[in-house]
Length: 224
Ligand code: CTP
Ligand code: CA
Image (cartoon, rainbow, N blue to C red):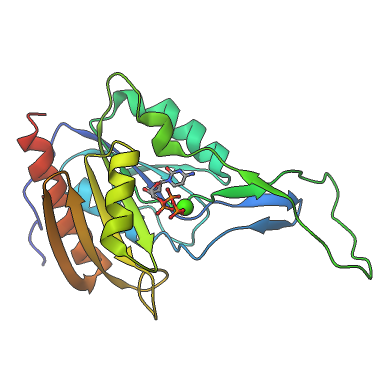
């Protein structure tokens, strides 16, 4: 039998995790979304539960089981994910924003299924709310870890997001070839003000455990 995998180094803490894609509907049966499978976010939720914390997982639509001991709140749109996050964040010690939130949504959502015509169709899009930017000015913020999925200039782009969103830490990963989305493994470059660690390619289960150790280390070092 497998022995306990980790010590409870986050015992007594409350951790909020966002995971998966969002769906932005433009009629009752059609939506815009992205390639996120939710695997990394769910692996993080499992690793945080193993570390002894109370875990709340705000999840977009994914085909994954809820890890043992994790409280899941299911949402669809970026706005619902934003509302759920704002409703939970005040009582959280740590927030890990792993979700691939849509940046744009259709400006209109038709009440009925849109019928095809012989013409092309142009969808008008508008920005969604950036959840992490909303939190940046909160008085009593949790320790916030963001994610960045990049196809170019990984570190420069991730560092910009760390600063812009006032994050404590950011975990950046390449999206290229089979890596980054949908796969069962991944690698991460983790950045914080004044430091960097590379977590080499491994299963998302192992990678999540390594990232949670790193987060806990810096969370505790910050005197929290
Ligand atoms: N994020 C968020 N709310 C959004 C979009 C993104 O909270 N509406 C969070 C993600 O969960 C992630 C971080 O912001 O933790 C970075 O997301 P990413 O898509 O990489 O960056 P963006 O700021 O959206 O910039 P871009 O997509 O243009 O690279
Ligand atoms: Ca984005």
